[in-house]
Image (cartoon, rainbow over all chains, first blue to last red; front, side):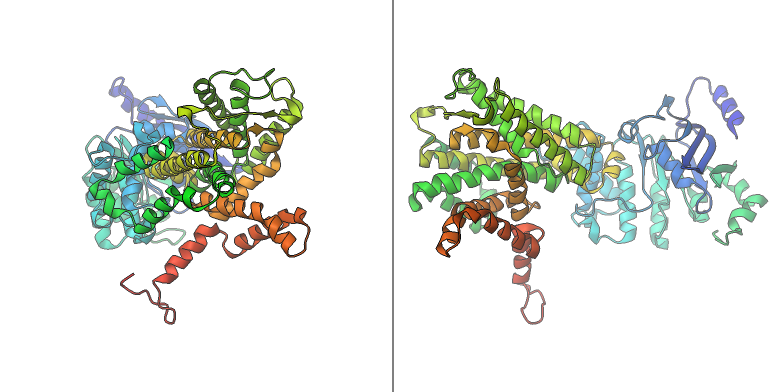
Amino acid sequence: MNAPVDISQRISRGTRDGALELRGVGKMFGALSALSDISFTVEPGERRAVLGSNGAGKTTLFNCITGDFKPSSGTIRFFGEDITLFPAHERIRRGLRRTYQISLLFSGLTVLDNVYLACCGVSRSRFSFFRPRRDDAVMARAEELVRLVHLEDVSQTLVSELSYGQQRELEIAMALSGAPRFILFDEPAAGLSPTERSELIEILNGLPEHVGYVIIEHDMDVALRVSEYVTMMHNGRVFKEGKPAEIEEDEEVQALYLGGEDGLGHG
Amino acid sequence: MSVSEDFSNTEKKNEQISWFEKIPSAYWILGMLLLIMPLLVNEFTLYQIFGWTFILGIISLSLMLLAGYGGMVSLAQMTVAGVAGYMLAIFGDSAITTISMGWPWFVAIPIAIIIAILAGTMVGWLAVRTEGIYTIMITLAVSAAFFYFARQNYVIFNGFSGFNGILPPQLFGVDWRGANAFYYLTLFWAVLSYLVVLYISRAPFGLALQGVRDNPRRMAALGFNVTAHRVAAYAVAAFFAAIGGILLTWQSAQISPGTVGIGPAIDILVVTVIGGMARPIGPFIGAFIYVLLKTFSVDILTSIGLSGERFQLLIGLGFLLIVFFSPDGILGLWNRWRNSLGKDPLTGERSENL
């Protein structure tokens, strides 16, 4: 839809590739079209919010990008490389990360072990038969990430005993493992308390400059404070794109989403 | 007795000050008991009860690694053990001199283990594409196929009668089929396999395997190649099964299609389920109970006036009782008992001092 704009942007930057380029991505579940003709480019280091009501296809889009689903049509490029047909783990090893909306954590393991596993997945030690030593670099990185999300007090606690908010923070720590180049956050603020929300915003804004992300967020307050650009989705299509302020002002968006036909009334 | 010395040496290495006090006294008592067992019991018990327990325990441990940590129930672990036994007979010495190549033990044993690992990896490569009941069916098909192949092939596997006269090497001038020597030989490998599995379970490979069991989709999203990890688990499990298979072949000095039949394949599953799959000690507990039942049920049955041929009935009944009262095996019973220990029997409150 906005492809011509994106192409001209790319041409103006010469040969440099976008971090994430979607071209006509579609996904059919049987006869149901969950996504159709999604095209956009996210530049390296860019922070973008994806908004849309329930069923707009936001999570499906994430699943296509990370390889949980194969898209039915279109291509996905990650830093210039066509990853459309790559298995999920190959995409992750190239620096793509994501968090999940529903908790997909290892509830029988401790917080530190969860983060350690995430760090192992993108390091060569994933097949190691040797337990980590005290000075193990991967373990040190895991401990650092646990501190970053303020979970150091519960690092030896089983994940099943964490509060919901702590589990969301753990999700984020796991997404930051290895050397992420681009992260997909799937509703990281859902179910968080106001304090936890401001902590989340702090963590997101504190990410290294070169790490771009796409964030799905229902809460406009959070979305507009952590993103530079907004993509509105509706019924599996890109509906509007623009700066946060423009989107907030846009009448069509307000009609659709903020004052909502479905009566969601976010914002 | 060199193996017992080896064993106590490894124990001495572990006796560093930090370790020494951490090991619960129950472990010391059990360890000492196992070490001085030859002084306490007769040769039959050493060779048939304990020797067989340790061997079955090692083979079941390979299933515990796959099923407990990896969530993959394979019925082909006895087949992998059998492949190792057959290869030992084919490349090493046996009474069937027309087939056996008679290569020295230090060549034949590594070849047997490598071929068994390859076989186990092949089984895994076939089976990891399936889940749950289909994994069981595929591995059952593999073990049935190997049984019939070994029984009908006379050129390599010597058909129905298989191989006999397969003896362990007379290393250090010890007859390793003597009751004491064989006890320490199997004890050594059982303890070693147990410790290695325990160690791997907390190493990245084992942690990731448990991650794959709990949440394969998430593991892929962390950069793990789930399929490769599962196949690797089959390869590791095959190594333990191969060790068990070689010891099993030495114990009876023979290997035949009966060793790798569908019955024995299911027995390994029964042993593992009876013991419990949650921790690597489970298979050894299960193996001990299984061996006791199998050895003494004939005596029990005849003593109460029933036909001794019905010993399978008693085993089945025992299995049924254990699974009925504790789906997670003896380990599950043990855990519940340990949990109830700290509780006040009337109020159900946990006391602080326990």
